[in-house]
Image (cartoon, rainbow, N blue to C red):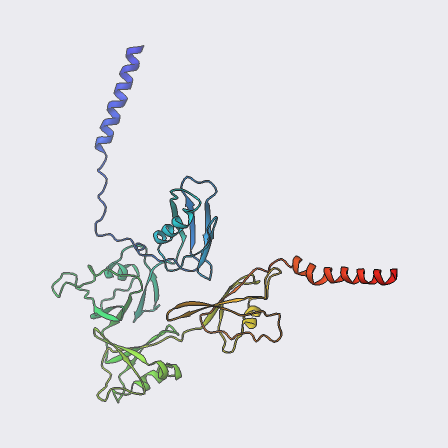
Length: 386
């Protein structure tokens, strides 16, 4: 029986070894693969799972607040927006070093803003496209089902940091090295697609999201006529101008001061800037903290009212206004809003208002109410005794 058992064990080990030898070797990692999130920076509303290795109780799932901060045990509030998870973990390790020896902070992004590219041009649904991995132009066009036989290979462009690049659909490499199969897209790229047709220009309204094609006007210099037909001619366009994309060139144009020899050409693209919505942020001890539309002439009290008013423990004293300047952020104190002679300061776009927690008023009540009352009783008693 013992010999039979040994024979069975040896047979099982032998068969297991043969099975492992027949398994395919693990694939080598793609050296060209660059994770989309390798340079990710933390944004508002990102959800982070934070833990300190080997320390029970120092783990927390947090959401980045509108003021750009998160809270964590022992170190309190810490600014997170604009930092990479690695940079934030290093900063937290330094702060935790006062309490924990050799702290090792791990940060995992649970919810984050997905990187996107923007697709515009002669397509049914212009808009954004989420990048779930490293994409080439060809992969994007194929997955988004945007390839058509009449697509003009000379006018498939990628706009990156204000520079337009022609990307050829000829993937044989006969017409240059830059083609759809080897051009890798990056976050915030704008892909612009056109198809063969009559001489025309296109107007892209950034705020409306519409892309429209119009024939060249009789007067090629009359860009205002094209914008009016597209419904994009307004005080905003006269105040901020438009961008004109022509080939690989991107020009900023002022409608009130066009170059003397300016003329529109076939396949010009006119980008109309979006109207920037001005906002302010309010956080702390108010009913509904968040981001709200800015209105000229708004005061701190107006902002507090927009956020549903103070919480029961919110303080009207020393309300903080954090305002960005070219040389950094400054903190302004709004003063005591209880005082009717205090004029609440007016807000500016981008202001961050923080409402502090009200301090305990027991001591103040004792000094202002109880002590005088006791003193008055003592005086009355002494008069009656006399």
